Every structure is written in C-alpha cells, then in structure tokens.
Image (cartoon, rainbow, N blue to C red; front, side):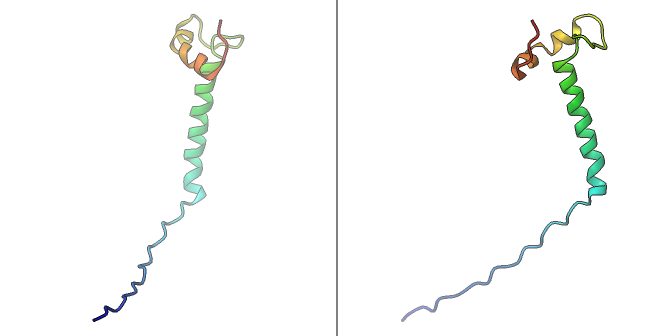
Length: 73
C-alpha cells in the first residue's frame, strides 16, 4: 500500500516592526560621539592639542595606539 505524500504549507512568520529613525537617531549620535572621543584619546591626546597635562592618558592608551597604528614614540 502506497502512502500519500503530504504537502505542508509553510506558516508565515510576522516581520519585525521597523524602528523609526526618530527613535534611532539619538542612539546613533551618542555612538558617534563615543567613537570620536575614543579616537581622540587614543590617537591625539598628549600631542600638540592635548587637553590633559602629564602622561597618564598616554600610558593608559599606549597599547591601543600601537594596535590602531598611531605612532607615539
């Protein structure tokens, strides 16, 4: 006796709701500000336009400078 092939219909999955740009924009700006600050402290601080005096920031970000290819000595 042959078995009949059963065809199953796929269950449609609901699409996620889109995130409005108005809600996403503040987080994008916040992330950009954090990225620019990190780049400043790793790449520029203790240079010609340093904000802090001394070498504490330089020593704290020393390995990050080398990892990202910034010369520091």
